[in-house]
Image 1 (cartoon, rainbow, N blue to C red):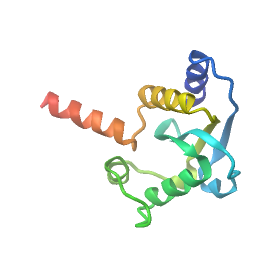
Image 2: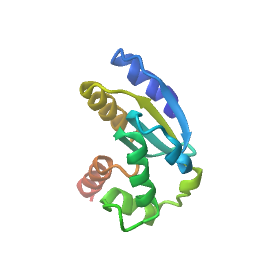
Image 3: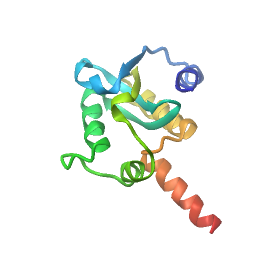
Length: 135
């Protein structure tokens, strides 16, 4: 589910980039120099799409997944922990090595739009707004 969508987005923007698959629980082994876009998933469900320094960001998401008070809690992560049976040690991370800011923003936005990750605040707020409009 995630890999074909990543390929489609990269092709659309004509971006040549390396995509790496990783076990979320081993995020500390990701090279510190790796920067780009990442997609966290559990089975076929997309948990989060983000950008930045991959290793550092994964550490923050690890803390959020386990409700560690070191991490700033957001609406999306709170909703995820309260409503979905999550197993972070089984999560996979697909990340795309990118450095140009325009590529980072374009690819992240497209993937959030297409994958609708559960814990992203953008998706959470859109879903919350849609629910309010239908009531």
